[in-house]
Image 1: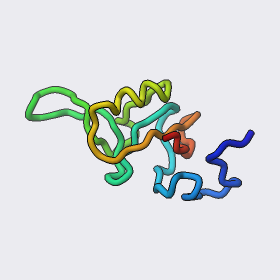
Image 2: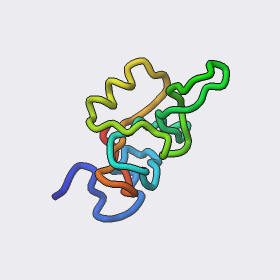
Image 3: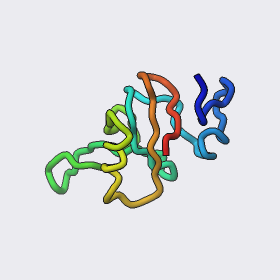
Image 4: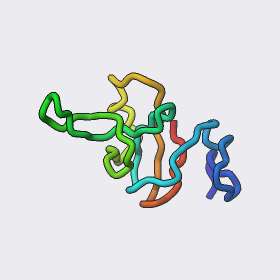
Length: 100
């Protein structure tokens, strides 16, 4: 099966990834919001000032929020600032592909 992101099996095909430098792999399967300019994910982190866990830019893919569907990931980006894309991995450890 082929898709628009197929790069002929070559790793690092930036043309197939919209010219973006995507992460090598994701910690789980699912859709993730990727802030490509900062090389960070939408995730959860402890906010010391607020004394609670909040949504934040996180570097570790283990702390990223993994959405089951593209639609859920898109809704989560509604109030976010900064350049971002949705990436997807169909299984743990897989190189993600650009969805939008």
